Image 1 (tube, rainbow, N blue to C red):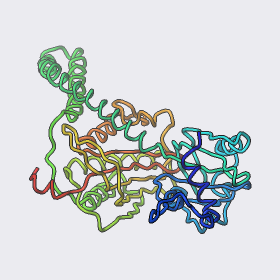
Image 2: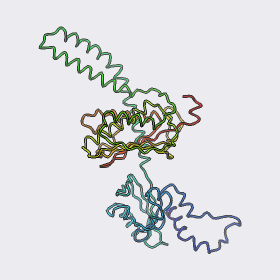
Image 3: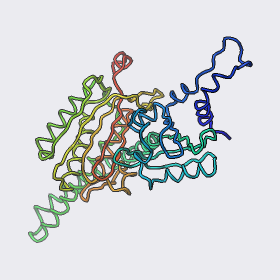
Image 4: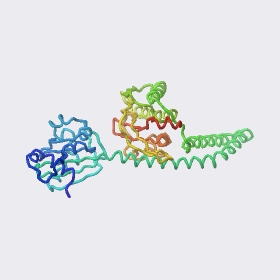
Length: 393
């Protein structure tokens, strides 16, 4: 079976000669669509390499994917962007040897100029271009992020149910245990008083844990127009006046952003958690130049269902919190937002689980990308619309 994108590419390569060939079968007045326009409009990166892996053609999506313009790519080889030991070259060699379509999944393209993960690549040979290989790339990270978001929401619901049970079944008996311990502390002999104090302190510790879990309860949130830059500025001031006084903050904001449709206090809690984690990461790593970068941008994001509704919302507003710490352990990364999972020795594993839960309540999405020297959390948030204003939610 011939790859349809490869078929279009062949048409592009041969369109000059095709224009000289009369088309007697085409009905009068009917125009043929230029295959180059089709390839250029595809939302997936398409690139054609010659026998020496030089770029012969890239569409607009490939320029964005590689972060290099078509004019610049014309003077480059693939090795200028991707190291030669990358599995991508095995796929290219296999395509040339078999002259068949070859696919590979979950590739990582990592170099000083390019960092992409969870990439699916399809390569096809072009007989009209000896040694030429057409590459079509698909970034699967968005689909994975959606899958993880569903898992995060499920985990948050399980914690919500646990919190409700604990609050109902544990807090009342704990009050009785604590009261009895206080009475014992007064009446028992001095040598037994230490045990009564121990019972009281442990009851307080369990109650504090239950209260921390109660914040996962399923409650509707009050939402309105929120200026995300004021939220970020508030969090930065809190951080620099306390736990992140030694950290340099760098802000890259888009001043034209519309308001977020959300809850200000909860958004402060989300970003404060992320900034605190970032500050702890650069501190624990004894960084000489600890830095946290706060960024906002507007881009056409994904569409997600609003919790408890069939309505779907766009998430074009992006907030990023990046640090230059050591990165997150690879075995923890897939479970980072699960309850009771923490990369910190003294962590309880509820902070990021709460972040994921609050983002789910907003109908938003959270992603994380981490490697040594760079960890970035990205929040995708809904913006205020006329429908939200009219609803008066």
